[in-house]
Amino acid sequence: MRDFSAHYKGTAPPAGFVPKAGELISAKFSDGAWYRAKIRRASPVKREAEVTFIDYGNQDTIGFADIRPLDAKFRTLPGQAHDARLRCEQPSFFFFFPRRLTPLKYTGACSFVKLVGDDSEYREDGVQRFRQLCDGRKLVANVDHKEGSTLHLRLIDPADPVTADDPLASVNIDLVREGLASVDRKGCKYLASYPQVQKKLQEAVAGAKRDRSGMFEFGDVEEDE
Image (cartoon, rainbow, N blue to C red; front, side):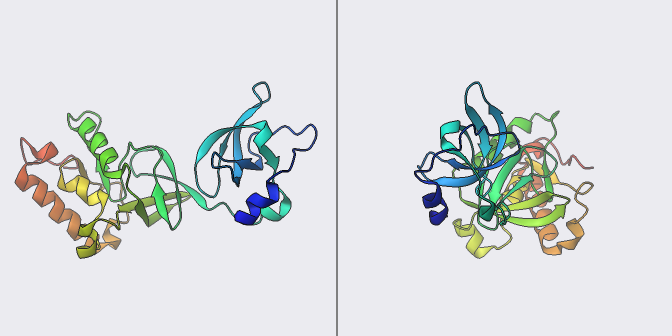
């Protein structure tokens, strides 16, 4: 990537070059380096474009002066950032597979589980807790299932001491244990393929019921039942 940035440093855009939506280009990021990107939308009037850096997932608005056509020799390698969503909700974010996850939006649920529904008084607590569990942490995304181009993810913090003792520890299970998410028995068709995770989730549900956490505060009722 250093060679790529050096290739574009000091170059000038071709005369009359106007970036267009969907076009692969090279763009200068705020760190001063050049990276591969894709135009999301462009404004010839403002002379700027909204881009997604296809190898990292970051999005930014870049002036035309800092955009160049992408040379053919840099087009062969597929983008290293994968578009994904958290199961049962549809916010988008990007992660660099198989490296650390970089969430861009925090609302949603995770692979195997779903947040409490919109009609629940604990919905906002679930969303806020999910943000808290992800914000500022360098998470690893374990791909549990692929549905078309959608990846279903288990979110793990390798720096958490709990993870060292329990390889099945995850943000997904934390939400269930706190009564802010339930096991997605209907929507998660692949749950039976992960018996150890399934057992861990059952233990988390039992703990939430015992402690009357979250949606179990006033009774032993699960949303799926």
